[in-house]
Length: 363
Image (cartoon, rainbow, N blue to C red; front, side):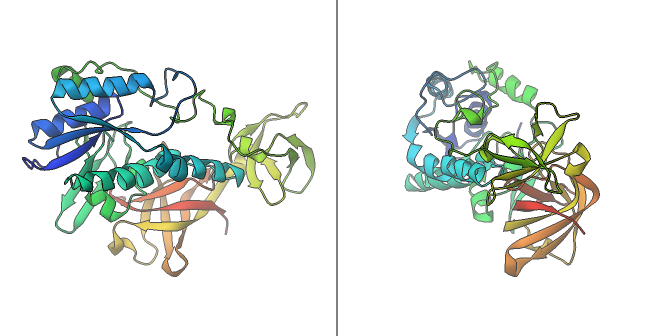
């Protein structure tokens, strides 16, 4: 059973996507004595049927309704297409247009689920939102404490951008459960989604490739160059590339990789695989979850992308500039501007802070 505390009769809004994780989260909450209100958020208007690995299609709405009915909880579908377009899709487009690598799931958590949906919850007398994320969240007298869990489904990175007040309003009923354990709970609860395929793609990228988006900013072709300025050919537009991506150039004698994207000159710098390694990074827009760890040059574990192995690093915070600098014990590969870096306590795996990566840093 999950680790969260039971508070009988407390009302909570459970975000139900139509998948197994959110349905089990709602079911565990009800078993713990909460008054659960299931809510499915309509995020965008699909232009074609959803493919197997996407979410937010009509079938997902039906599955969410069916799961709520089986659990015996009320269920509502709320329209958040405007908020999602403004807080997630526009940011996604703007980042690619500026040569950054966005993370739309983090934007969705910050601005929609713990933003718009939280306001709805408060309007109906619910102080908490529950989701089906896999991460350990403890509510103590001094506030919320978010921890990475030691299994492949860990999603603490996706939640590390939430403010302390947002985490305080969040319940994570799945806690440290594994995916097989969640599916076992789904079978026990009689949920028909117990064996449903897991969604993996960005929900609003209907074909599975973000470059298919008709609304992605149009980009003009520009030069591929080496670090010394030597021309290597033409690229198709900077929105088609991210740092670390292999660039295919006809007739090139060896593989080349994107090491830098400069939107001001519309150039993309290419290099060898080892050129992607950097000893550090700079980041901005700090989200400090545990202020007591802002001592001079604290040792941390840093995650530079959602599935990255945490890497040992030393952090230097510059609060007045709303920034930090990390120096890694070992160089890290493909540090991508626009991605989030999450900082963990090496002893406990607690999430201490997060920030948006500005780029790699060198001595």
